[in-house]
Length: 162
Image (tube, rainbow, N blue to C red; front, side, top):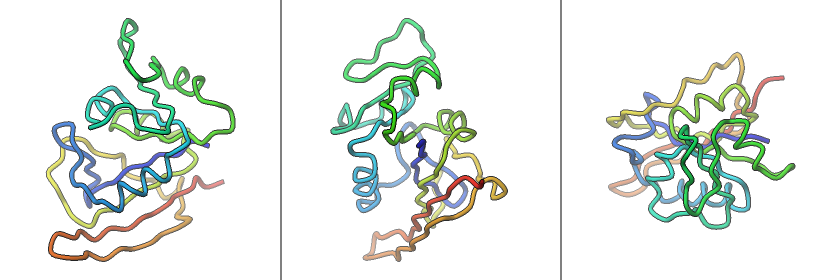
């Protein structure tokens, strides 16, 4: 099972200057809960943006297009196929970014865990728009803005149509 997990702004922005657009504590806790005990595949820039490396209790696989590079404290992969071959059969695989990695995995992903943040933010990296002819919503849960700094968002799980 290949799942993509991401938080997107109203205009599909996901990051700026190699950082997240916002830090929603509950969303970060959900990310940790969902991905713990599983493999996470990410690009090198996403790896570099992590405050603590590797992500604890997960198999960290980092994709690089440099065939001579080895990423310390992670499993280095050099292609989509190579990254998938380094996963344990039967385990859930989470694709955690960035933009080009999401685009490359979209055609083979089974599920999308998307936090739709109901706000625009300046971004330089965007998530590809979801084609509803290919995807359907299987679960959705809305959250109101709480407190003066709260941001409203919706957790949506999409599954590939059969």
